[in-house]
Image (cartoon, rainbow, N blue to C red):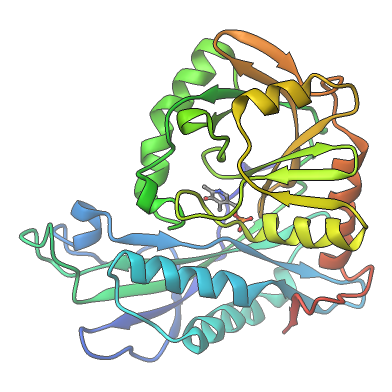
Length: 330
Ligand SMILES: *Cc1c(COP(=O)(O)O)cnc(C)c1O
């Protein structure tokens, strides 16, 4: 099986902003774009993206999950990066156009079609370190993906670090620079502790990992950091919290300290998970803090994590009613 996100459909949807207007979107080859080496994005990182999925249902139809929420987040990312504004209708049309174009290639469950809208500043202007790009490019790539847990589901190892993942005012922007800033500490954590990810806990406040939100499940309660500008507002996080409430669980969106997390993790039956579009909900088995290892519960993937993931998958795959109106049939 190819690595997640390494296979692309040969065409993508693309639209250009010329400094005054958005042009018509078109379906074009996805293997190259032409960019001036002085393009704003290559020097000053004017870039943001989204990640969402389309699913094939048993009747053969294709549905996109929570497209509106992802589009709204991309508009917000673009605005906070001073990239040109675009209408939600433009991006939604581009996503629907390209997913329809490849409707026959959307994998059956547990696979799906991963959708990657991307917005970059294209103006050739290296004097614009402190000025926005005038022109930009918006495109939507598709990547068919298989079962994220094909190798089996094991508890992840997270190294808890006192540092922030990115600058605090950049946290809710899905932008390349934030991943760049998390990469070096993550590689160090892998080399030194065989950690899978870093759980960033600036000043003892449990935030998120490099590309996923963190949830603590203690019996009937889910605890996760309340939304603020310092971290990414995951659509999966919002979805899981909504489903947990539906299932009668108590959802606590509030500050979670490193101290409280380690205390609660030590209790048998406690679970922790990472949420994100790619993996949906991945169990966390071990926390590493100041050189010491702490198992979460018994260290194995837990039943509540599995149940929440299954509940979400069933909606995505059209196996249970979509009572929240999260699916767009194309
Ligand atoms: C994308 C991302 C998430 C998860 O967001 P989803 O909308 O659930 O996919 C969480 N944290 C970071 C830093 C991310 O980049």
